[in-house]
Length: 231
Image (tube, rainbow, N blue to C red; front, side):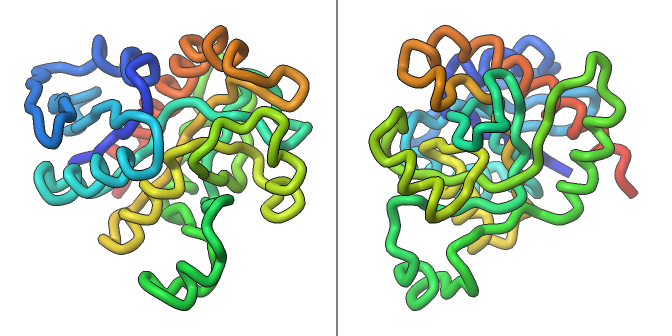
């Protein structure tokens, strides 16, 4: 079993690197991949850079070059639902693009039944077990994420909420889920909230990114333990 972990930015990746053992780095497509183990489980991780295309490039390389069996997207996101507060964490049940016309993915490749890419059911079950075992406890939601090529502050928030009712928004998760779907690779996303409607903007993201990244890392590592022990 080999798990790929994709983070968007370097701050989101940094908490993983000190806990990786026997870590070796390689480069491909201007990206740096870190391969090693966490608690005895083979891991390949990286930060892919912001936006959908960067995330898709990294995902396909993890699958084709590093032959990962599972992909986890770990990092931060903007909160969209009023119940989700800063430093809460959302684990994806399904993911959609908020800036792609629905028929693009249902009437053309990959001919989805709906606009949503669903997380792997087994990973969802394992994530719930992992969260229950954690101490200290974190405030975790399971639900919908949406992805698009914009940092959402106020513009577009209302329309996105009305159309998709997501818990979070980001710029990478949908494309990672998309690549995993067409390659039949189990996928799940774990994102901790840095900004919300009442505390919006880049300043809040930057102020909260480091702490939120550590929370996402802790929950991801707990999930890795469940993956390792899953029979």
